[in-house]
Image (cartoon, rainbow, N blue to C red; front, side, top):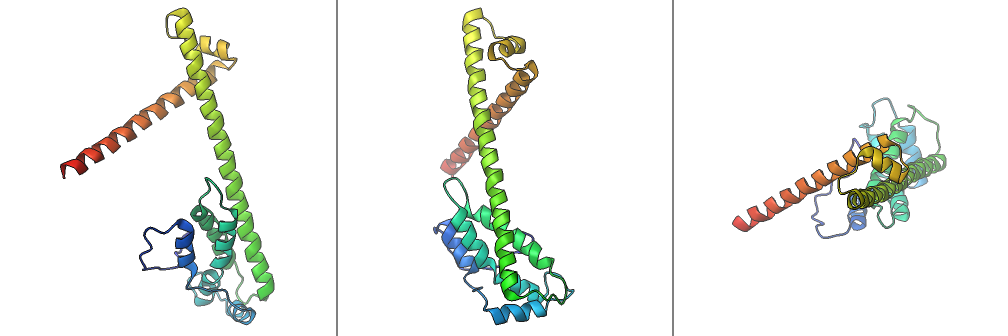
Length: 205
């Protein structure tokens, strides 16, 4: 999100993510209908930094927080969902026409709708990414097992063509998977070495 909605100078180290988010929006409680109506009537051409738009953004972050916490689950960060919902809220507020006749009830309904849509899209994308990662990991295991089996049977490392026949994959896919597995292994080794270097540096201090 381009604009940081809240400045929180309090040290909340050690708190969980949900509690930190709650602290972030605590200074911007929900508005009543009259307050929202006034801010909507004052929306002008000055962009998101104009006070009415900024206040509408800040004082509706509670909607984002409620929906992010409700949607979060194992493996899903409420902070990430909060960011996605906040971006959708920012877009809505920024898109308000100067002198809008939108009422407070309708505005709140739009806020809920755009935030829910953004969070649902984020969850769907995350689920798709997890499914892709799981499928990739399974294929990597199959490739490793096939490679080991053919080595034992033939006494030599199999070619991509031999692996393709064994696995029933196109040869191009075998090559792509081999490269991806090698790159992942190299990255893992590099990260491991970096971690070991950090440990050694800490021990030398």
